[in-house]
Length: 228
Image 1 (cartoon, rainbow, N blue to C red):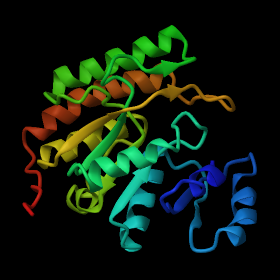
Image 2 (tube, helix red, strand yellow; image 1 turned 90 degrees about the horizontal axis):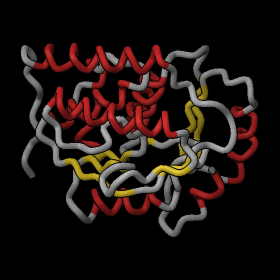
Image 3 (cartoon, rainbow, N blue to C red; image 1 turned 135 degrees about the vertical axis):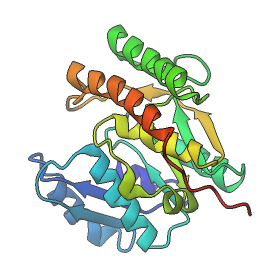
């Protein structure tokens, strides 16, 4: 994944958030860092602190480094690195504040997922749209490009979900803040190595959490995007 990203015609920097993984990820990244100086970075944390905290850690790191566009993506090739260029273009050229790599904006573009998983994901997004009022087709997508002003505005320390519902809360908060959100169609491939951490418990927590999030939003004042 690292070599593929660095082979793209546009220069991207890569930050790996490493939460004590037993598969040797940290050692591999550190071995490659001298080959890609000032482009490849690693942040190591002790223990499994949750998906959401890892992303927030990365977002804050990127803001401190003064990047104008900050991406999030899986590192198992479920997300095609070539699509980084399309997400970037949607923001830098198309005027979006948040570009989402969407599996469902042009149908169901998922390869090699079990039908049960496809249906669960697809109808979870439909449920989120119904509860929140957002029009986003892929509300649980984890492949995104943020303009830095989104991450500066949405008060990252107030994001409460740390599991998969984190993806929903980030989109919902950006939407409530008035940012322009666009979906870029992608093809999502099931991972070829490793196992998903998705479970029925996580799914149920997300379903109930969306109701709680929507209810609390009725009593919260969201900071608004500043016009250019």
